[in-house]
Length: 206
Image (cartoon, rainbow, N blue to C red; front, side, top):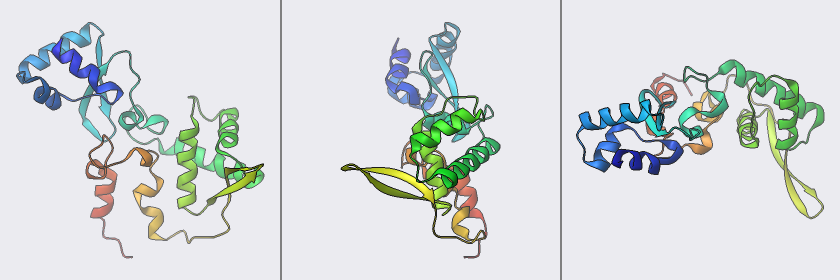
């Protein structure tokens, strides 16, 4: 019951065994046995984190894992970014915005879902993240358009052009679909990001 309560308190971000040990003061062997029993009874489940493929977190079996853990629709079953899917959504977004812009996130989402490219439901937040990366790449730009008395955020083709070989387009944070969930000490954080670590290790001539 103690282990179950700790897992329940962790919510949909889950908790890994080291933190369970600290919070319950139970020996590791006891926690391992208890987890096996809870999983067999379908009370809890283990989920791999996109930030650390070797680490499993545990949460209640009825919960849908948070995007910080799964990476949302942009990650495949192998816990790696689905680059082909991300590229397809980016290209669809660019096409729609250039043909119909300025447009809202909701309008881009409706177009994408109607295209049949995605076999899973996307949310406005997901599409907003894609549009944000396109703004960082200076392909699109974010503008506020007055509709009545209220400003509405829309996207249009960028009026600026950035060279393709600029190093700023290579920074992993600029195209990261879970950028908004990244913060120090969180499930997604700079100190845990393998892509950021690899990028920093490169010998880049600015």
